[in-house]
Image 1: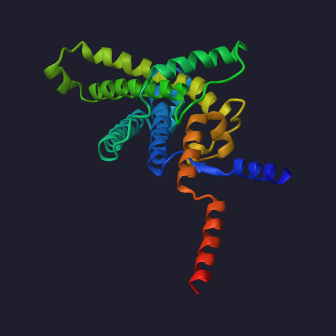
Image 2: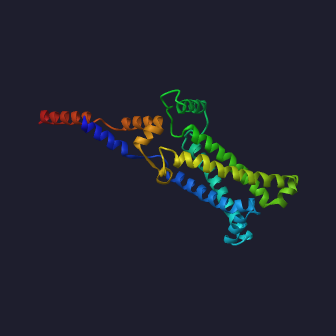
Length: 259
């Protein structure tokens, strides 16, 4: 009994792959781009504050600050194009479903989780590779990046835009760009950092998005449906040891009979 418990404990500490190298690269790219865009964008959003003026001066002046901001804006555009290419490859070349699509089950899991957190029920919902919180945040990021990229391009090329569209679009794009950027920062600070790093079960840091791996124990706890699928896949590709032993005995007996 102690031996089986030791094996189970050791197996629970083993790490398994959760994110591929392409996903790690994509997350790192967006993380760096977002951080630089915030550092260079907030001072332009609040230019009258002393901290904004000091930061702009440390960055080399307003011209350099805008140049850096626009450069990393194109990095964000590259990240969006890369992600679209990843999705197209995932669906059409690999013939796999879109795992981030919202379903009725996600809304049901959200309600069940809320009831669990309030102490109304004793069991959390079983979750797959991505849970409802991650999906909600993902689609919020998709909407936010779309607004930021489109409004940013409008502000970068106002003359070209006003040749085709009404001039009122320029101040509207400026307002959307500033407020959406501020909203994205608040979501990252309040929602994402807590859910990904500062929550009770992950504090002080969750390294899975940087290493691509998590422990079996954590996968079983947080992504039980995916963990069960992994066990089923392992069982289907592994021949039981007893069958191998029996096969070896039969082979020797047959060999002795032939001799």
